[in-house]
Image (cartoon, rainbow, N blue to C red; front, side, top):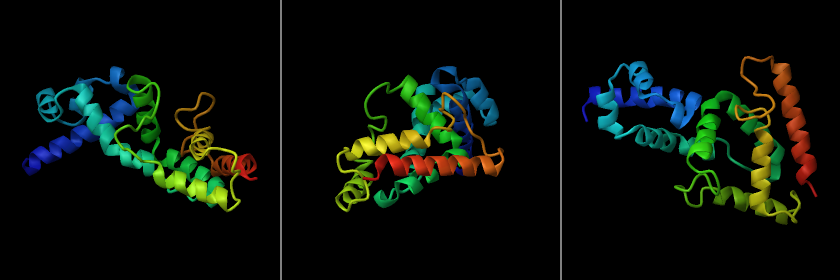
Length: 190
């Protein structure tokens, strides 16, 4: 693919990221994506085959970031949760893409079926922290990871109650970080 083709493909992926994050797979419109990318639908279909193929390319491109946006240290679950909170503020499209994939593609089971063992390092870190007395050992490491992740999403774009945004006053973000950190600490410390 020549440089112009690569640039068009990149613009299509960028425009599709915004569109899919806002409207999901069913609600996204290839006309808007093509227009926003300064391309045409024929180019979109030539590169990606279909709207579903385009979503797969967008989700695949963001998958590593969705899974690994924040490294986990099992000895610091509160820090992990608050770093996830910050990551969701900085990259709300990641949460939205994952939410749409859950709603429209993978309604049950592991969302990230294409990355076998994607949580292996995180689960090992939690198990190690359980053995060293930092995390309640009566809980399964996978459950700890799921619960901490869900707690960190309390104010994310997928929240049923309140979705935070970067433009809010930092005192609000600090208050939420403290509440999240303290709650995670209390929930998992033996």
